Length: 402
Length: 205
Image 1 (spheres, rainbow over the protein chains, first blue to last red):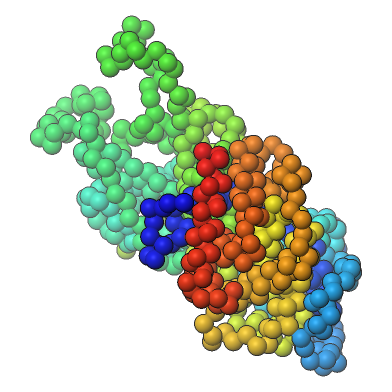
Image 2 (tube, chains in turn brown, yellow; image 1 turned 45 degrees about the vertical axis):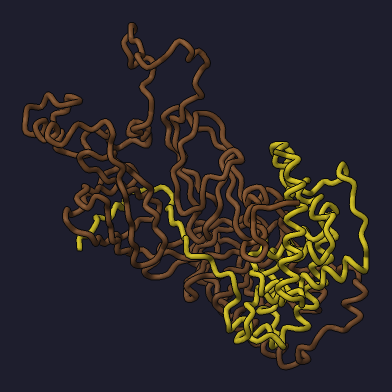
């Protein structure tokens, strides 16, 4: 087979489409595989911190206090037992050769019930399960879960808290969480440098001090941040703010010249002149004035590429650029927007919309046609999260992996 | 530096993307504890790496990639891994993940050679698409099947080299060390895998 690649120099797999290869996905292993491996290794279960059952609402404080005392006592007991076991246990040794060559039947995992293993970054976070503090050898917090769903909350001063719901019915649960910094210093750069900047927080504009490149932002849990830049002669641009969780971040935003913009002299005369400007806008000086209204989740109106709908046109409108040969219908316009991101504590994920790779998180904004769409997040370890969403014409919808 | 006012009234969930890669390696203290044989640390090691080992084993099975076979191979691999773990040095050239995948790859190659599993006919393959639901597009399923079949027709050694490169992002030197062959041999194996994959993927274009 001939090839245009040089075997001595090039990556042998460079011309294999990675997206195509990614379609051969390995399934997740069975949830009890860890237990089965540990059973094969003749491991005792990890130290367990029992959790009391959720308290009744009426006696919540009393039960919480008793539960905390119980957890402390149980933790102490578990530590004593664990240290005793460690002293009594034989030193780790290589497994017998027979175990390698002759696989035995897998024994069911020992232990009283499913366990929760929480890995946190940073390590010294506070973890609560159903509002009860859980202690353990950080970053590993091992707890015995009662059947049903549990609310796990991870907090640390200076970081945004993360809340997850886990279900112990299916066996052991592993929960990796990386907390993001609450306070971020943003270094914002634009091209052209004179572009005006505006921060949008959940579709509400927040002022940015003009002429300042660095801005301190104290993030709110749950807010969606976007950055908008605009300059005369350029197409305005609004992008999701890719907050990484790092304390300092640099964001660069490059604007594209607007081919429809009037020459600079003409634009200047419009600004100086009356309010009967190009679009009849009374506030043409404001670079954002022609963009959108605020306070709505529906943000399709700011989409500069959105075509004019038929009902906006005059009944006798004739498109001078449409030839007679243009009989076939144009593809449906992408008038809806999906804002895609991973939930906090999760790593970057590859995102596919209707089977098409659209990018890797952090948060991204994808224009789609109205209708039903299948969104899939995949992580490097092979795990995936799939959701089908329906988005209407002009609607903007946030979809985050869970 | 200006300060952006906080907007505390927002009730929606936070969007906190974390482009910094989530820890992909066991931290040093846990590794040492695992090497000492402490149960919690060994469990943490298994939890952290079992998906990658499982993905490698499952794909190594190619078109015969049945879940129970892959999990058997994963267990065998981890028994070997823990047998050799006290000898692993974090100061060495290999990352822990690379070292684990190396042992897993060799373990799976040995098991494949010992068991010589029959390759399932294409029509009988039921888990080639990553356990996806039946509503997956048929195109995705067929691509997975084509790749699986092509990989399944490679020798275990070529399969291992290909998978470590394409799905686990090991470089040539790491693959050479993992499979105990020269870098030239790795290149040769990868070019043979590439040729097979190119031919197979032509079918779906």
